[in-house]
Image 1 (cartoon, rainbow, N blue to C red):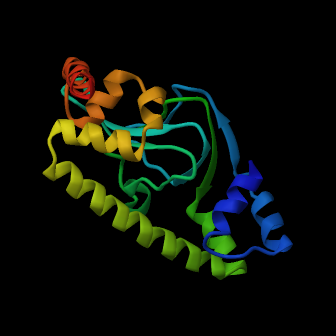
Image 2 (spheres, rainbow, N blue to C red):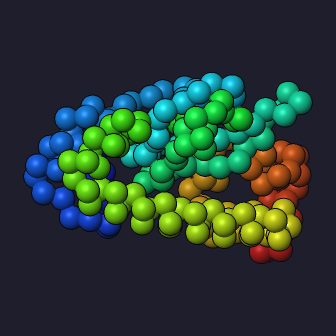
Length: 192
């Protein structure tokens, strides 16, 4: 798993053996079971997550119903906004599958950044990429129909179709599970 982490980091900066060893000494790697809740609504959090394997999701519970807002899979990063703002979380984060994550906190990150300033450069570049991606995803969601959202999902993240329960996928697309079934049937019919 450490090779996957180092490979990801190498897209942004090169690492010396000392830097790799410093990261490994932080006890970042955590194996978590499917269904593990990492963050609950109302909790304060300090942790950021990097998915090495598996899938986690963010969701709200509104009037007793889960509303999925995002899925994070291999090499995705999540820093819940409550970590940055030091406020209680508005949403939940949980494991959709068994996961191996790196879990860090602001203190760990500050320590690494002070010893190795180039990590700050990497974090800035990564933040810029994530912000741009989120803006594009948000705009696509707001300007597309449920069918277009599903087709975009098939094109950009086809792995989610097999990995995520249908009710969570439907929630993510902003529709009911029954509507997702009808939508899939309609798309298959068009292909025939």
